[in-house]
Image (cartoon, rainbow, N blue to C red; front, top):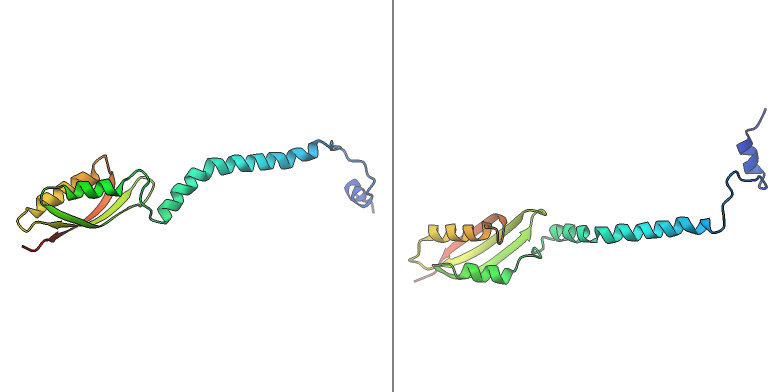
Length: 138
């Protein structure tokens, strides 16, 4: 039975290699691997941060809760704002939940429309909002 040359070379450790490796080339592979890994890590850090913020229901970085709170509080007929929560649902969609305490004489429909228009506009770009109106006692 004839054995293949590959098998013979494996058994015989003195078998000459077809492609001799230069001593300087043996460092190129690990160096390229490390360099490529660093490039991949650097280019994916921002995507990782955005994904983590969505998974943790974090407040979008480009949104100021303090400014939104003040603008909602300055709507006509609104006495106070509480339980304001805004989070990223997807990379393009924001979700908001808020309680607005209104004057007992104010038109609640107008307040609701004004608040909805404010948060769904281009400044805050809220995709879905839940606005609960509470009437202040007289």
